[in-house]
Length: 299
Figure 1: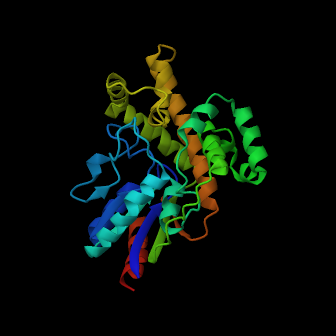
Figure 2 (figure 1 turned 90 degrees about the vertical axis):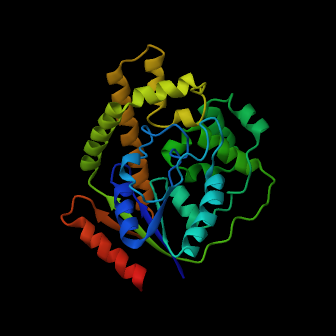
C-alpha cells in the first residue's frame, strides 16, 4: 500500500520542524493541513515558518486570497490528488497540521463534505444571535447540537454550517476512502510547557512584524468581517487598529486565544486512538521518532 505520514498535535509543538527533518531524511514532500495557512499574505500570524523550509517542497500555503472561500471540501479536493502525485514520484507525502478535521478527512470520508454552502440561508442566519442559532439547530437535530463541543456550540460559523447541513437536500456521496498505509505521529507536552511555548511564539511573531502584516492586509482592502480576518493572530488586532486597545492588550488577547485553542485541540486529539504520541520534552526525541518512522517506511 502507498505510504502517508501524518504529523499532528496541538499548537506550538514543533510539527513543521520535525516534518522538514523527516522529509529531508526520507525524500518527502510536506502538505500543510492548516485552515489558516491557505491564505495569501497571512504568513506571520499563521506561523508559516518560511525561514525553515530550505529546499523542501511545501504545499498548502497561499492557496487563496483572504477574501476567498476555503473549506474542508476545498482542502480535500486539493490534498487528495496531491498525495497521489507525490506517491507517483516515489516520494513520501507528509501531512502536517493541528486542524484535526482536515487531517481526518484525508483518511476517513466525511459524509457532509460535499454539501455546498447556501448563501441565501447564510445571509439570513447571520442576523440571528448565538442563542437563536442554538435553538434553531436543537429543533432541527438535537443530537447534532449535543455532539458539538462547547466552543463550537457558541461559534456562529459552526452553528450556521450545522444548520445548513441539516437543511440541505444535496445527496452527493462523500469521496471514497483512500487505500493507504498511514502512520500518525503526535507531538505533545504538558499543558504548562505548551502555554509557555505559546507565550514565546506570540512574542516572536510580534518581533517578526505581525502589526505590519495586519496593516498591509487592511490597506489592501480586506475587512474584519472576512472569515480569514477572524483567525487567531488577526482578529485580536481589530481593537488596536480602531484605537481601543494597546499593543500589550493585543498580545495578551492573542496569547489567551491560542491557549484556549490549545485546549480544544487537546480534547479533540485525546479522542483519537490511532496516534503514536511523543512528548517533545523527552531527551533524544528525534532519534526515537526517526527510528519509528524508518521501521514503518521500510516494511
